[in-house]
Image 1 (cartoon, rainbow, N blue to C red):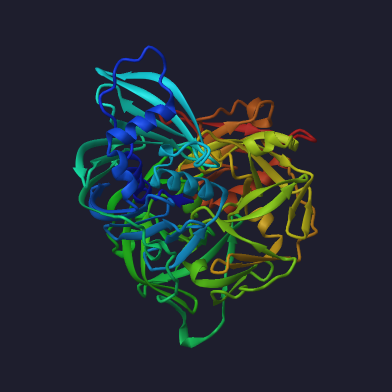
Image 2: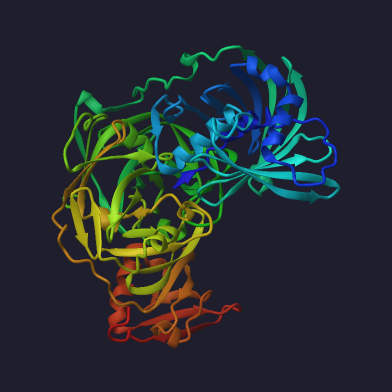
Length: 628
């Protein structure tokens, strides 16, 4: 799960608006040619003055989610290099593009190169915007351009132009038909979500006109961002040093006593890595280790720790929805002998099905990126041990079982193959699933599941529909797993809607390996574990899935057609208060999964609660032989 990082994209959007200016246009008898429009825009918005500016820098006030902050942007008008620093509440960070690599620097100064497929595409698009690529002839700065026609919104009319830079993302510019100014810029991310930028308050600076106000929206006004320029400076030549990727060093983490290595035991809970974490000297709490997750607390855990959240930001995950989060800061957290100082935590609800654990303490949150970015971490599922050592442990290592990692944001990705088809896969210890293939990749390579059945999966952001079964072969580095469990995920938005990513590798597959992550050197060592050669099971099921409404109730998420549950009259939306005569609060996710597996052979009684509070017992018979 990765939260949105909005301010750099919003700040760079101002770069686009610097060029989209025009004198009032005369009525045209035919659709305008996009290239001619851009030439006219350049003349109307500064003409040759643009050619005398090599670099532009501006500062802006930022408001978003009830918080106020600042943004500083540098932009190379010739090469497309750019750099954006943002500060909002307890959140600070910087992103940039040095002409070769996109990068991000987190609030503690740690730098990660963003070289995943989606990150590369976005970086090329941002560079095109930063250098006013539409001013150049297509032969010099290639982009596909198309006039999409006229659109109306109330009394306003807009000419809409679509631009797709070479190997970049598609943009749609809405130009006010009366003034010729850019009124909106539409941009759709690889996750299927559309961002709309609204421009206004144009003013002249050093001979060119700039929008001093930009509002960014993703469809929910609660999360709108607003930038207002406060200072602008232009330079005739861009200074390369201003766009260089900054150095990175760990300054806030250590192993107690100066040790070079330590081990941390973990448990497996619902197939996920569960560790004990102490925050600000408090009693250890159960946290899940998620390779792509930021420090995260549930609201209940934050209240128990006395941490007060600030602001309101959006967060996305597996589903198509968006949730609100707040941020808070803790003085220190401790994982065994590993210590991290002055840590920011996101405060957001996690699925109750995951959090509630019956008579055991509820899950308090997630850790992941902050730990893995600061150390080399070896995960041994057989011994149930994390081995933590200094970052850079795999630097310079060249071996068949050492793979390159790439990053779109904070989740590691690696190249793998499914049934011979190669693609880029996220490596996700926060997922208890096996191999999740994204529908565009599966369809594009003709991948078909064996033992195919319908289901649902979910997390932060809601649930998505899946088809589940097995593929013939999965290869990660030099190692091949025959017939692993696999899903095909059918999502319209969210992290599983990507058309660039092939899929997600979860714990059911990762746990067959011993994994050594070194985010610092962007390397991963993959070694077979003791269970590597064990066959993957595809157990029979009763044909229904549950989500937790609250501590005392489950809700039926879906019922497979022709299943034992469907035959017994179980319906999606039914509220279940007891299973097999045991109350719902008795079960954590591990126990629930085990009960459902056993019940496929023996059948199961469900207590289903009607809207008026009355209950009935529904007997779900065992699954038919061969039914999966």
